[in-house]
Length: 157
Image (cartoon, rainbow, N blue to C red; front, side, top):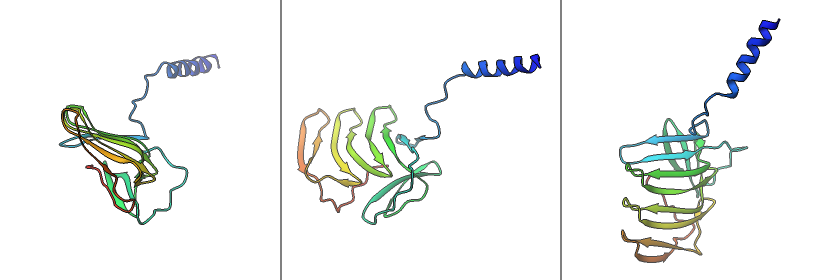
């Protein structure tokens, strides 16, 4: 009996000093492609949203991120999304909520200078704000009104 308790205590104390699990657990994916590296969160949603025909959904399956209008299959992107150039400079960054772009999205040139900033709400670009484009030396090239809400903008995934 004493021996069983001793062995049990050894296992419990060993688990307390175990190494930290990698940040790429069940809710995160990392995809390495020929021209970029993608890190995305696929935090589970409580219940799957009903797909809206006019929205573009982003989802993960078979080590790829897929894009489809009006539907999805697989795990919806949900959380932080970042893509990098092969030299690890940021390429694109934003948040997905239930497979749809939400909030501020930024893109960068390969030299690290900002290229574009766009705002999204539930997968639709917010038309009241503007989209800003910079050149490679951070001089504002142009500022335009965002496209109408019914247009579908897709990133370079």
